[in-house]
Image (tube, rainbow, N blue to C red; front, side, top):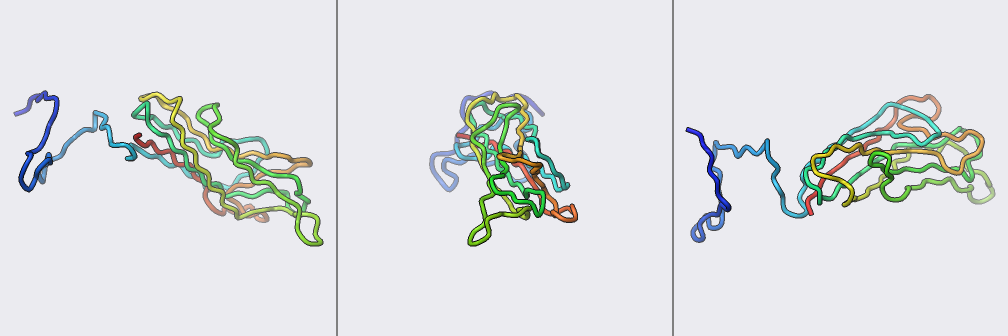
Length: 195
C-alpha cells in the first residue's frame, strides 16, 4: 500500500526514553534523493574534488582544475580549497624579481585576492636566486557567500600564472624540473556549507 501523508510537522513523544526523537526503524530507508534536505548551519551539504597529476608548464594565466558545481541552496557558503604542487623556471637563471600567482574563479569572475609566490634575492654574499623553485606545495582557501543561485551550475576554476617576469619565466606544475617526470598532485575542492 502506498500513498501520500501531508503534515506540517513531525515530532516525537515528549516523554520517555525516546523523548523528542523521530526514529526510522532498522531496515527502513528515508529516501530523499529527489528532494533537498535543509541541514543545520555549519553542516556540509555537498562536496566535490578534482585533481590533476599530469606535468605541465606555462606562462599565461591558466585554469589548472575546473569543478562543475550546482549549489542546492542560494544562501549557503561555497568554500574553495586549492593545493598547487608547483615551481618556477627556467633553471640556472637568475629569478630575482620574478614570481607566480594562484587564484580562484567562478566562471570569469575572480574570487578574492591573488595568492602570490614571489622569488626574492639570495642571502649572504649570493645576490641571485636561481631557478627552479620546485617541490613546493601552496595551499589556499576562500569562502564565498554571494552570487550563486540554487540549481544553477557554475564552473569553479583553480588558476596559475606568472607575475613580474621578464625573459621567459614559466611556471611548472606536478613535475621534476630536470626530467619533466610527474611529481605531486594539484587539486581543487568545492564544498557547500549551510549557514
